[in-house]
Amino acid sequence: MNAAAQTCEPDGLNILIIGINFAPEIISTGVYTTGMAQFLARRGHNVSVVSAHPYYPEWCFRKGWPRLRYVRSALDQAHPSLSVIHCPLYVPGRPTGLRRILHHASFALTSLAPALASALSRARPDVVIVVAPSLLSALTGLIAARVSGAKTWLHIQDFEVEAALATGLLKPGGRLGRLALAFEQFVLKRFNRVSTISAPMLAKLPQKGVAQDRVRELRNWADLDLISPGPVDAKMRATLGITTPHVVLYSGNLANKQGLEILSEVARRLSHRGDITMLICGDGPMRSSLHQACKDLPNVRFAPLQPKERLGALLRAADLHLLPQIAGAADLVLPSKLKNMLASGRPVVATANPGTALADEIGDAGVITAPGDASALALAICELVDDPVRRLAMGQRGGKLVRTRWNPSVILKEFEAQLLELKDPTSS
Image (cartoon, rainbow, N blue to C red; front, side):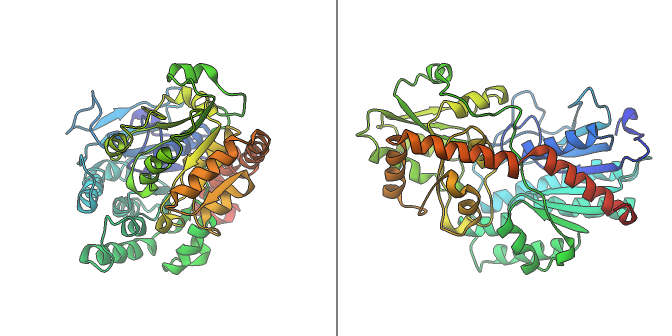
């Protein structure tokens, strides 16, 4: 921890955050861990972050980053009470089940030294926060907390063990699968607080042995400063070389737990619609296979992830957003991209079963079709494209929903209050 981070305001906390994903990554859980750290630093808390070298969603080493060295970064020069150290780790080119375990284990190992350095510093943490994934790094957090005497908070962005089982990365009943589930239960019982992002995911925690009084909700939030409703962004469409009247967009990580195989099937069913372009914007392990599956489809266009400052324009370039998901993962993860989709004032067409977290969150702001049913998804797209009045109404409902349910100021201030209460129960 740097010298400027050795002190904090009288009522501030010393906070250690351990999370494998962080800025400069611009999608998924790293966005929220970064936002959490910046918010707490700006509120006068002394925040140290232990993260990994950026690799997501490309699953490869970033140019300019050393593979074997630790890297310190000054993320927010205006707030020197925030310090970040990036740890080296193993990054598999093809993240299979075993390779993912080795990937997460490497971060748990390399993050231990900087976490212990923080725990033994003059500004010992009052609270250690671990963000899962990666659950393996929870051990690092527990060790640092034991050394420093800190309280512990585990925040679960997705139930990675069950998601790995649902997507076939781990075999149900196999030795690795059983071991992973046992490790998950071991870890969950040892944190003072365990939070997650949706009602069905919250309901799972007591089922996994977490006492109800230790369970908290910590929702992801929309970037309301960056993303807002508005007319179609024709400039962005032109930049991407799109000339059709309508655009349906999938933007984000291209990985197997999203059930993205359906996109090529849907595009094929829409190939007779010369007025619709399917835009797939993102990076990840499935990019090459998706590209191959769509190579003969002129109605599909691929684009890389856009810089953060262009995200709002990208989302407004669409008429509607696609959010595929496999049935087995519907209550294990709640895609972080959903909030910004809704914030753009566009309806969301998702694949999920009724009553799941994803279906409940979308509500009347979009359309839900059965997972894996390409015909139903294509039909829903056509119906919305051909009904601009319905599209507008759904988009307006989504915009209102985001402002009330995923407002960052409300969510993060409540989280801060809970951290203060955890450190000093008499303060509540």
